[in-house]
Image (tube, rainbow, N blue to C red):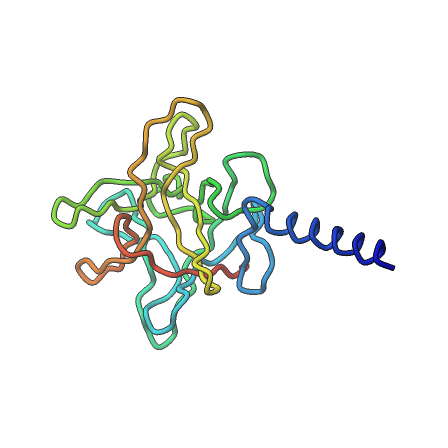
Length: 200
């Protein structure tokens, strides 16, 4: 009997360790399902009464378009769906692992809708998230990741993982939403904005 209890305790301990030791858990959508590569999702605020989903925004009357948030309105828009593609071959989007992200469909600028780190605002020192250029594997400007805040919502970040032994240290930044000339824009280097993901 003691041998049976000891064996069961050992098996339980192994199961607990393997569950805790699983690196990079999947990012979950609003229905509790893992985010999948190539599937369309809306990126929505994790809090209410702040605006709609993420979309393309014309910031200065010309291309490229910026990543921004639909304004708060009586009928709040979900924005434009996005597609995530992991940097390293996987079919699931995982926490703290790099991916590229692009809006689904074409933009009015007839350019890529892939997200990348853009220019820095000299006044706020925050970097915009822009679109308009095809991702290049040699650059890390396109590689974002997602972190779980432990409360059922997620933060988007730019902090690319090093895949070689010699990587420059990036200036990591969490994505937040800023108001600029009545436009809500996604920008790095400030408080993280809480997001959830809903399958389109």
